[in-house]
Image: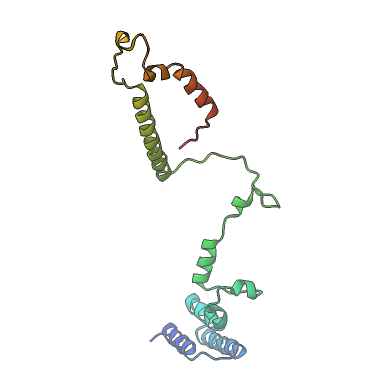
Length: 183
């Protein structure tokens, strides 16, 4: 076993038997590093130094409180906590167009509809067009042919015929007075 493996084994045993008091832990880590540099003439490997630093900061790194940032003045974040914070933050470039009151002063841009929105609009248009076409066909279709014999009625026109007089004018007046709403 070479000196790096021995040092790694010492670091493993130090981490598994972690000292409660932080000041004592710092002194023990310093002694481990000094012993290594004196016997080998060089500093320990970076990965082992990082493991020792994590052991010193054990309380901060194992604190799982979600509000750690708001209750601690200088919080240490674990890698997962740092990733979660990064995912929740927005870029500062997004705030360029906002004033101090929170109003967006950027030139408004019309956004493109999504495919789902386009399908919804098309579906409504199809329904609306079907209703409109059905109404048009009903209103413009040829009605039943009714013949009137004025000799039989004595020259009098039947009541259904006289009711049709002025129908176009009445329809125009109704259209002007009625408000239509879009579907």
